[in-house]
Length: 265
Image (cartoon, rainbow, N blue to C red; front, side, top):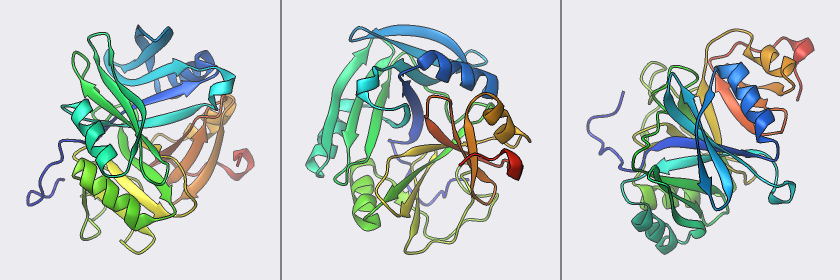
């Protein structure tokens, strides 16, 4: 439940895409695990950009990359009414542009920015396509988690650029927005930010990249992921880390721990 005394950000976390050197394997894994199916394709600079849907609603993007373009990975997106002005704000706050605002047909405008410590966030300006990543019944996006070497500096950048606000007190388990992973008491090593969509979770640790957190309470998902060629390992509480066969990682919260004999680190 959103704190009614806090302003609602115009830049919520609410869209994802996954890139993979073997996108067919990645999307087949996601379809068997969650039931997400390909709904549409558009051309982006000569590459097919796919949209994965649940019950006909587009939730996530997916794109084939070359092996020399890196490993399979998810990108977390901020949705915004004006991608170009948000990119300019990110640059003014010390961020860098990794991919300039680019129209995807009439569906939306996409951009990539990197914060001063090197973590990348996407920006999605919806046009014809309004993301349903947060609302979907099939493994909704409830949070995105980032390990950062400078919690204060990363938090300051996110608050200045996107208008996100910290949870001043640790909300009870049934009152965190909109069901984020494993609530913890605020401390020097952990910070949660309201975005107006999925929760931003910052952990003081080695510098990393944003990783999506999906909620799914079905039993056996860890074992299913392993049987499909992926991996699954316990993170904390009821949260497990899953990687598809190509290596793109995400977190699942609300899941029972995989049986010890089946866990792959």
